[in-house]
Image 1 (tube, helix red, strand yellow):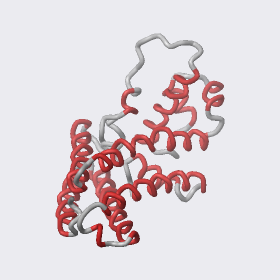
Image 2 (cartoon, rainbow, N blue to C red):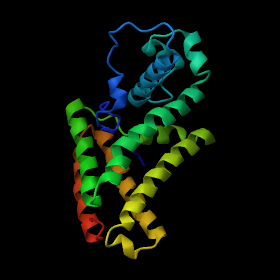
Image 3 (spheres, helix red, strand yellow):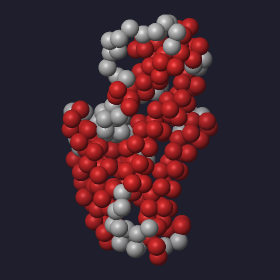
Length: 229
């Protein structure tokens, strides 16, 4: 599964987001004592490196160099790579998923239109950027879920929230109102899986075509199941 590429930085989801804001070089002079700013810069640079190179292929020295800080400063904020990885999941990836998928679904009056808008934003971000980095959540889920239970718990919590929001929205539709919670949850899993699989294919082929195809088929499926509105 993936949640959220376009997730514009261009968000890792493909969309332009908060992470992106910090990607550009900072031209203004930094305050010498700005622990909050330093920590935010570290998280931004680390998330970007994890997205571009992968978690295991990124060293703490790589993060230190990208953030422009000393080893002591990095280890003051994040004493281990694991603590940095967990912080990136909680403070960068979670908000990215929230912005790319959850907020649009919560705000839309129509599930079909909400899902379509999410795919359109992600595809638009990919086209604007010219490359597919994949979904940050999916990327890290594939790398970290089997390596440590704390990583797995953090990742699973994001998928659980994503799934719950979709299931609750499905419950408000004509077709969803006739289903029990187990079937609504299964439908939500299907939507996430379709997106995640399409994103992985898009990353492998460096083409937004799999996402465009998935969006069209999901739209038809939502209408067939009477989940559109």
